[in-house]
Length: 196
Image 1: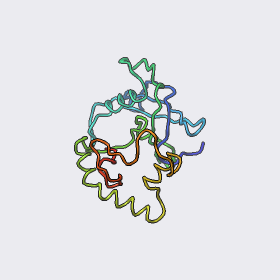
Image 2: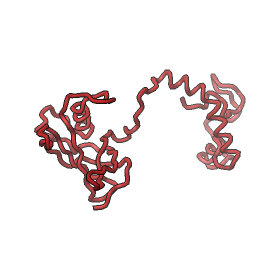
Image 3: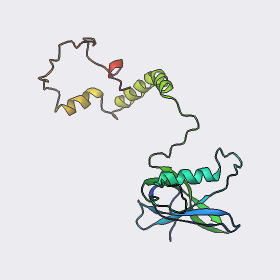
Image 4: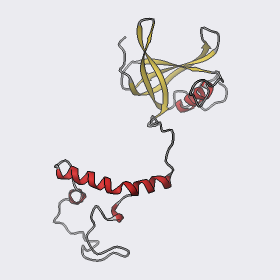
């Protein structure tokens, strides 16, 4: 069987089984079908150790149960894995070398679209403040792209959505001032046009 390139792949759990490692420790094996590679299956192994080692923030047993939950298992009895195949997930696959042989290995199992890992996520109020500070940079980057012929301006997009620039909207005259709005035409620098 050929190897998958290291990366993130859409997958779904097919089956799971409890067992033992070569050292006699309890473990779980979950077989995943890679959805983008017809017929390709790979096994993820989870540990039930409670020992936190190295730089880890969570124990292996915590990670194992998180993975089972992400897959769709909602039970409390780990001997009954009903629902394990319920959710589509993302698996992070890497190449593992052991005794001179290469094989694929599942490093992480994440919720679909949840593969981003930030140690410190910005709270909503900090996001808005940061966005306000970066607004000038964002506008400058868009204008630079438009100046190079690589972008469509907001006005061109509006014209395209309305079927061209020569049509008047019958519900709202172009020159009538709306309550709470300035009378000058909206520009990209107009705060009221920013969607956040």
